Image (cartoon, rainbow, N blue to C red; front, side, top):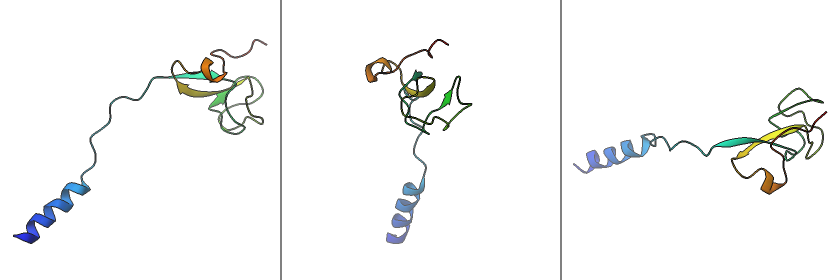
Length: 80
């Protein structure tokens, strides 16, 4: 009997966790990405991971909605 109880305990531990609630809404934030860590870009580079400098104003990164301007970013790319 002891072996059966122990076997069931192991089975419970191996079960995957229940899915979590939907993640926090995100928004594009321009000018906050570190070099090589941008999501995508407009202008000088084509896409993810191509920013050459920190805080490139044309590169964006996804951040929690409502935090972009608080961390020094912009919600829109710079005008050409």
